Image 1 (cartoon, rainbow, N blue to C red):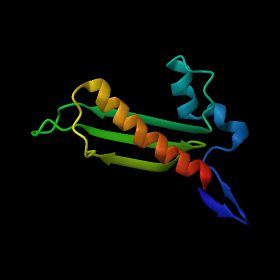
Image 2: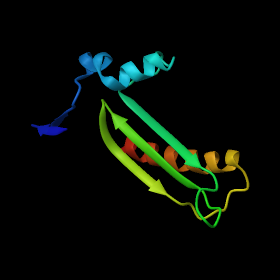
Image 3: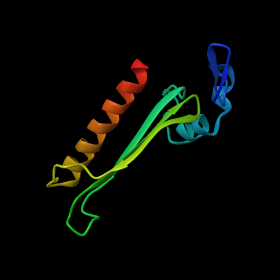
Image 4: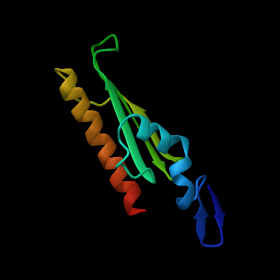
Length: 102
């Protein structure tokens, strides 16, 4: 992104966003109804660390540009993969809500 006047110019302008690699990927995955202008992905891995901790990450994209990324090991120790996904999704939702407020 680059600042032009008081506005940011996105990597993919809104009218051309349907041609972006992200929009194509969403369509191929069967998520054509998802608006690719603001997308957040998250994933976790349960028990990958030696001490059976989970690792999580999230990636936030605005009009095809990376605006937020984090990889982390949360403090709570998850007892299942479902619980680890819930922890990671919670962190991703908090980060996305913070980006929405900016």
